Length: 128
Image (tube, rainbow, N blue to C red):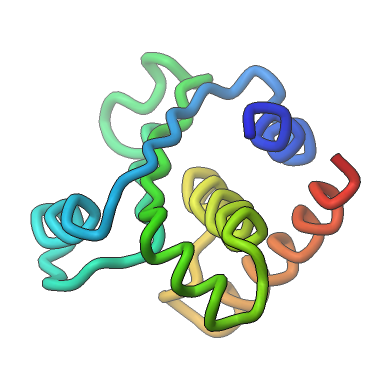
């Protein structure tokens, strides 16, 4: 997982970037989703960027945290007919892209930009 995360950071021109990856269950990610986003359900991935806001320049290499629900990743993998590892990598890429400011919820154009970058990174990771 560390090699794949590093490959993603390298591809995003941030080889020295620091991030944490937290793997949790559905109840914990649901609690985070409720606390920080006022959403009352589990989700697959949440990203907490550290390069935003008033103190973003204190540690510019500190990208933030990516929280992934292994339970939701597993179920989504089953539903999509892919392995839990493959779905987990998709979610890891998705979360890391959020740390870099990609967003799929604001406009369709931004969503397409994020989807394209995600597909590029998935192809890169397949080789590792």
